[in-house]
Length: 395
Ligand SMILES: Cc1cc2nc3c(=O)[nH]c(=O)nc-3n(C[C@H](O)[C@H](O)[C@H](O)COP(=O)(O)OP(=O)(O)OC[C@H]3O[C@@H](n4cnc5c(N)ncnc54)[C@H](O)[C@@H]3O)c2cc1C
Image (cartoon, rainbow, N blue to C red; front, side):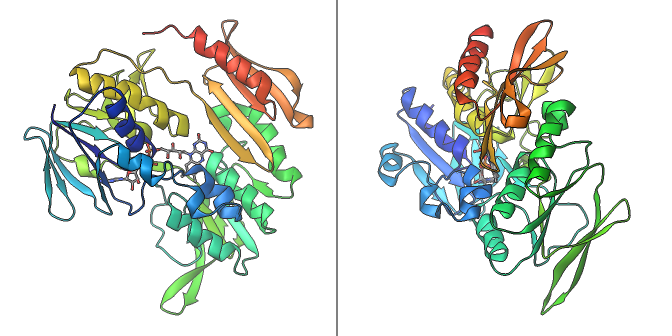
C-alpha cells in the first residue's frame, strides 16, 4: 500500500493518521477535510466554548508541530465528492482526484434538523465551531427565552449552558424522561430532576410541530414553537438537539454499503478490504448478531487502532471492542458511562444517592454487571470501568 486517503479531518481522521504512522505505514497519507479548520474537539462546543469559558484556540486536538510530524498532506476546506473504489480514486469538490490504495472513511455526521422547516434567524444546531459561535452570539446578544428541542446528551448540555448564561430555558423531549433509551426510565428521571431543579422547564412526551416566525429584514426570524399538544411557546432562540445523520452522501455509487452509517464487519472493514470506516460514521457488526454505531468521543479515538490494523493487514485480523465510555457535563456535575446499558434486567444504585447528585449505578444482565453510570463519583466509576474492560473477552 503506497497511498492512504483519510476522508474527514476531525477526531477519528486524526487518530487514523496517528495510527497509520504508529503502526509503521511510511507511505503517502492524504487527509481531506471539508471544514477549513485543522482537527478540533467538539465536546466544548456545547459546554465551555458556548459558555465563554474557552476560546477556539483551546479546541485544537494537536498542535501544528505534532501535526506536521505526521508527514501527511492536509487538504482542508475541500470535500470528497465521490469514491471510485474499483479504480482506487477519490474525487474532490475542487475537481482534483487522488489515486489511492487505501481509504479511511472518517466523515462523522451532520446535525439533524426537523424536516420541512426552513432556515431562519434564531434557529440553531451545534456541530461545528461556526455553529457554536453563531449560537453564542445570539445567546449573549439579548435573547431572553430559549427552547431546546431534544433532551439527549447534547440538548441537555446546551440547556445547561443556556441556564448558566442566565437565560430562561424550555427543554422539549419526545420520550417519557430524558435519555430513557440510553439509561432507562429510572435513571432518566434523575436527569429530569437535574434540569427542573435548576429552573429549566422540561416538557416531555411532546414534539415540536412548527416553528413560528416573523419577517426580519430579508429573512425570517424565530418567534416561538408550536408543540403537538397544542401549546405555543415564545422563543428568541430555538436549538435543535435531535441527533445527527452520518455524512455518507459522497459514497453513492461507490460500492460501499451504507445503512445509517458505513456498513462494516466487526473489524470496521467494508466489503472492500481497502476501505475502512471509523468514528461516528462507522456502523460495524457487533455481537450478538446486530450492528452498532457510536456517536461518542472515545469511540472515535479508539476505533482507528483496530481499523488501521485491518487496513494494513489487507484483511480483518482484529475485531473492535468498544469501551463504551461516554461523559457529559451538565449543571456542574460530571456524568460518566461505560459498558453496555441497553437491555439490563436489573438497574441498582450501588453507591451514594441520586438526590445527593453523587452516585454510581450498576446495570446487570443475568447477575453480571455489564454497564455503569456515575454522577460525580469518578473514583468508583474508574474502578468499575476497569473491571468491565477486563470482563469482555479479547477477540
Ligand atoms: C456539540 C457536541 C458535544 C459533544 N460532547 C461530547 C461529550 O461530552 N462526550 C462525548 O463522548 N462525545 C461528545 N460529542 C461527540 C464527539 O464529539 C463525536 O463523537 C466525535 O466528534 C466524532 O468524531 P468523528 O471524527 O467520527 O466525526 P466528526 O467529528 O463529525 O468529524 C467528521 C469530519 O468529516 C468532515 N466531512 C464530512 N463529510 C466530508 C466529505 N465528504 N469530505 C471531507 N470531509 C468531510 C466533517 O466536516 C467533519 O469535519 C459531542 C459532539 C458534539 C457535536
